[in-house]
Image 1: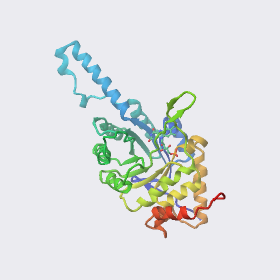
Image 2: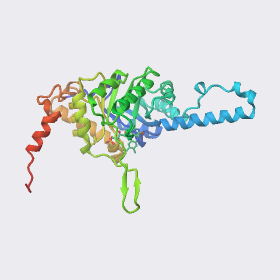
Image 3: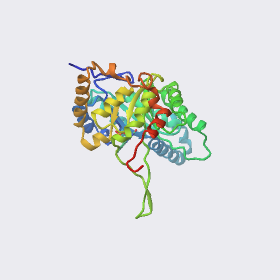
Image 4: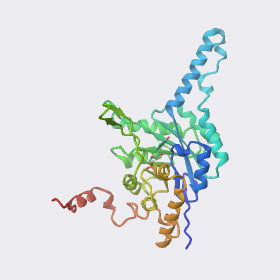
Length: 335
Ligand SMILES: Cc1cc2nc3c(=O)[nH]c(=O)nc-3n(C[C@H](O)[C@H](O)[C@H](O)COP(=O)(O)O)c2cc1C
């Protein structure tokens, strides 16, 4: 039995649902070409950070001021900051080169936390040829003065300021730490997000007891992390008008299948590819295909979301009721 693995994500037709997430593996054209040869259906470039863009803007600004100081009359000859930008050239070059070298869709990634002038770079991503943009909103609400309403509005303003710049689709990658995740997902979509990438994984600093120092702690994921995205994709499937991409904890064909059953349009991989190398994509695609053929699924489209909250026979399983059941049925050898 042949299985049709195609899926649509951000209006792009993908040959199957497995996408290379932003990671060092997507940072060079050579590595991107290896990922394509290994069979990924699309790639997300590593993020260009708001701070990198602002740093460049400041450097240009200082240069212009220095020039103006040398010759005050010359001030009028210097173009306004808005129309003069060097921009993070290397990143734009990577987009253009990736587009030239690859036939699979190339998604460029922007990482920021404040709405503002830096977001005009999105237009340059589009002009460089990006098929879509992933906006990673990496913001930790650590101030005791910021209310959740203010924090949420900041997300919305940021999404609006990016989506207004471009006609290509924009997906928003967010963390799960909202009091009202489902409502937030709907608001992000209303602000123009064509897709949601669930979820951002914040670095969790650790304390070194020997050095008595706080250190950033980047650990690769395991399949145990999968269930966070699994739950929210299942809840959101059919309830928001956006594509859903899963990121975080997909390592095996079973992981990919579960996310598709929950309702993911595609499954993004970083840790798994960093652990096993690009060729692991083939193992995952073959594993997914074999399971689907065995269960007589004709296509990903047919299977996608069949165990989402709206479609599954036990919708409570995704909510509070399941917690009570799970606690009550737990048995320990020591109890
Ligand atoms: C070394 C490394 C670098 C990453 N760089 C980025 C990045 O530039 N932008 C981004 O949005 N996510 C980045 N991520 C996050 C991944 O794209 C992915 O969302 C996360 O690792 C969870 O997926 P996984 O379980 O498949 O690793 C990075 C992850 C790793 C491990």
